[in-house]
Image (cartoon, rainbow, N blue to C red; front, side, top):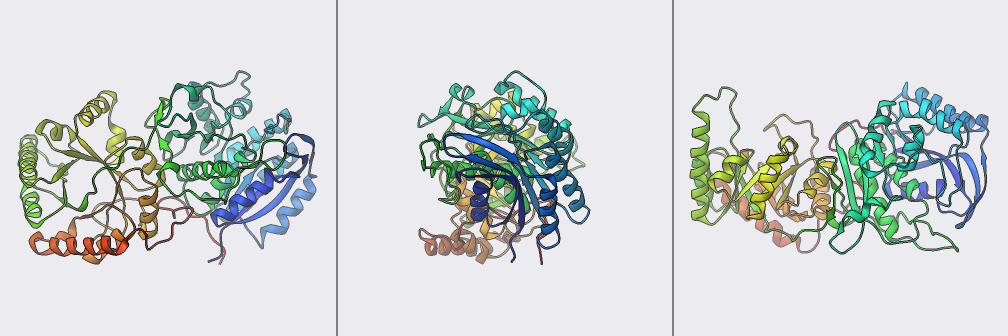
Amino acid sequence: MTPPVVWSVAGTDSGGGAGLAADQRAADLLGVHLCGVVAAVTAQNSVAVTQVAAMPAALLEAQFAALADDLPPAAIKTGVLGSAENVHCVARWVDRLRTRRPVALVVDPVLRASTGAALAGECVVAAYRDALLPRATMVTPNRREAAALLRIDAPASAAAVPALAAALRALGATAVCITGGDDGDDDRQGGARDGSALVHDWLASEHASGWLTLPRVATAHAHGSGCTHSAALAAALARGLVAADAAVLAKMQVACALRAARAVGRGAGPVRAGAGAATGPGDLPWLSLDHALPSQWCLPSRSAEPGVYAIVDCAARVEAVLAAGAHTVQLRIKRPAEADAQWPAWLRGEVARSVAAARRAGVTLYVNDHWQAALELGAAGVHLGQEDLLALDTAERGALAAARRRGLRLGLSSHSPWELCRAAAMQPDYIACGPVWPTDTKRIPWLPQGLDNLAWWAAHAPAPVVAIGGILEPHQLEQAARQGCAGACVLRGLGPTPSITLPRFLAAWQAGRSARGDRRDCALPALPHASLGWVAPQRP
């Protein structure tokens, strides 16, 4: 398949560290074709920028015209644009291209070089504000750039960052990611378990908002990190991921590029996107539930693997799957629309009977949704969907946290990278990845994950991953086990007689676990495929 095309409208870096050079390295890593549109030429090395010259707007126009019919973009990202005329030229072409097909626009408002040299005057800043922000799919300033775009002179504290993002969205940007790599003051409030400081990016988008947090990479060589971040964002958007997912994946790629950075001159060396992609849970950021700045980040100890995970809707079915040998059981009882006054008592009775049966069998029982009843009646665990997690108020979160300190187990759903990051921040005992196969059990907007995304989840999640969705036949459990996941959920596949069907699923799971060894059937991609959102068209 022909790779998606990304236009990078940016400046050259004669030192090879930032600008179009950094964008090209990120594009190559993430499997998109980059068209480098030169908007400015800089004379620089690893120590200083000595001159900046904007490309004439007519020549920028000519580059766009040459590319438009032969290499139309799925996404455009901007770096140094050099002049207000060039900013307006970009805006005109975005409008023109969008009459033909969807085009994502990532605006990296590069106002100053990492060496301190100014790269944009007030007229350019005003053009960004008036012409590009209203068209931006994502804008990626650091705190100082966000303040400059909003005509704020004072430096922004971490507490003010969410308001800055809201103000930028009010100017028209669909999504905002205010990066924190240049700001270290607030990092000292907490840190990773190994003593590393933290880096917090604030994400504000249609689908998710919160702090994206990872430990700071200890290096003096960060030249081109902002370019790499915005290029990775554009690549993810071009491949059909929504802005929240793109922000997660871009942060992961920057962390890897920083770890591989090295000196090539006397000053700060360039980051090296492509030297090593994200491959483990240490690369996955956490996504906060609210505006509170996270004070810690750590990889929790791994919980027990759930194995074959039976999901049932009543206590009698709990008893049946326990008798058939289920490794883990979830009681999922949905409140009926016509529930009457007897519903709470009936629910409590079902939970109590299920808890007692699981205790006798020595098997972990998770209660879906009804976490208060689960706590009161002594269930070993609860499972929450992302909507249920977000619906908890401060007091309810506190009660759940206190119960977890007493040993309550927690399982969380996830359908996309941003939901995986939010789940990771809760340090659960397992994270469900779904739907792996198409399912009509309930109406959901998510596309099937497939085995490739399941393998990506299993590699990057900081907790055991459980496959869920569309599992009807035993061979699907064998396939799921081969991708490295720690469990798989069976619901409709159990049929009316679990005593017959469940042993087949158990045998298939064991076969997959035995065959997998230390490798997965699917090679890990640098990016998972989209599970939600608009899909940028690819060239035929």
